[in-house]
Image 1 (cartoon, rainbow, N blue to C red):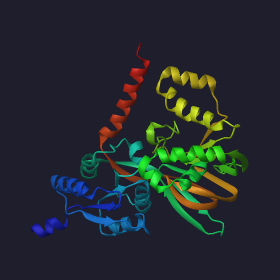
Image 2 (image 1 turned 45 degrees about the horizontal axis):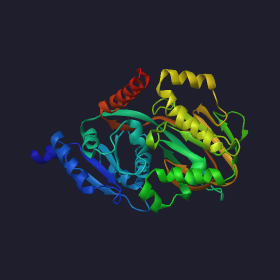
Image 3 (image 1 turned 135 degrees about the vertical axis):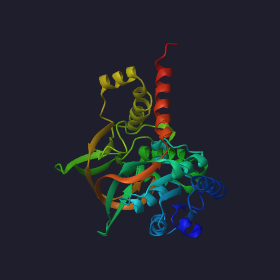
Length: 347
């Protein structure tokens, strides 16, 4: 009777990057929450160099996992999401990487393994969108992937491709900033042809084009102010070259306007008055297509995906279920209100 009852208990699965995961801490947290929730034994699946996590997650699904905890960097999380797309099986993000982009946008804590594990066993399900991308290579081969946060072609992808692993380990996400500034200063703009929502194809000269599913980047940088994880839309961001000091104008737009002015009512009025869209422009779309004359690097959620002649895709609304704690969203809202009160209070 006890064996039969145990057979029907729900089970979690952990897909983990062995070089990025604090395995002892994660095993202890999972054992505690598993027992407290009355679940069966959790199964563990290690990723490998040739499999970032898609295969491991598919094995977890085949083995009957009721929830999947993905532990590692953004690449591990993205790979797990690709396997879980449309399955209805919830994903819990265990952030152990450099950027931890999805975790930041969900409001999940970055240094509280016990809390994110608790979300897997007792949290709430939330449906979020996925971005789809089809990459066409120079040899005309094609492959399709998902992204959770950001896909890009141009400066951002070049910077990620150029970032040294040793610098990344030492500086974390700041290594990308270093590579990005150096790339912008020395590289020529990129000439692309683009279309959104099947509009007529248009030419554009840019430093980079990024397709966003959500807006926050490391360091509290709000790259895409209106992006939401569950609005059924993608946000296309283009950084335009405007002379020798373009990178200063772009940083002012993203760092100052999005990161500072948008936090206050007065700041938002200033943005409305200036309305400078020359250096950074935004489009919202369900579909997109980009093509370049020569192969260019492509990045998905901060990982290098090689060279491409074109990328295209669309949003897949509500295709991924994530498991979160309700206070994560409340914590984000509370922090935003607290910041606004401090900035708007009289000195």
